Length: 159
Ligand code: 1DX
Image 1 (cartoon, rainbow, N blue to C red):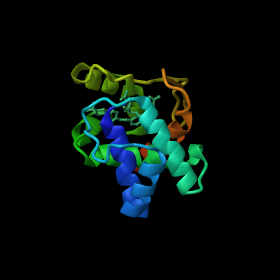
Image 2 (image 1 turned 90 degrees about the vertical axis):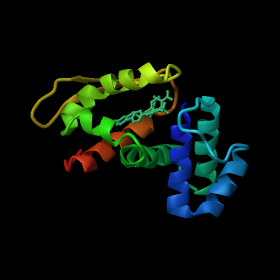
Image 3 (image 1 turned 180 degrees about the vertical axis):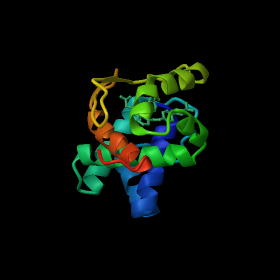
Image 4 (image 1 turned 120 degrees about the vertical axis):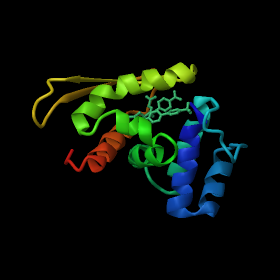
């Protein structure tokens, strides 16, 4: 995954628990890199090791780490250079979710190593829809609950 993801994990841990906790997690994960480059692709294994180590150090199950990270990602990317892109994706929850595949397609033009997940919306009604998440990656589904929750906060709607 692009370094932006690992950088976001690092910044979330540092923000919520401090640099020392991050250092403990990084060492437990046997990750050599400390300063991830956002636009560089890293092996997915690094991300998975960081999540596993964070779950051990923080005594939280991995799905909870992933959920918290999903919420954080929505705020983080809006503040770390992708605010305009996020604004363009829609100004309400259903529009945003229906535009996610386009957003990823646009990112993928500049960053060909992106492996975008797909979010398909069906049965879109006034205040409900079915959201189908498909990914080439295993194990990240709990993050999607956090992502959608983060979007709910962004658009001031209950999810
Ligand atoms: F509901 O893969 C709201 O590396 C949502 O299954 C869901 O393959 C918002 F570094 C720049 C860059 C780069 C911008 F410069 C990513 F290249 C992308 C910013 C999306 C904001 C997907 C990240 C693939 C990396 C993936 C969970 C789970 C999608 C993470 C969340 C808006 C993003 O994101 C899975 C990769 C961006 C960028 C957004 C994602 C890769 C999402 C959302 N994904 C890279």
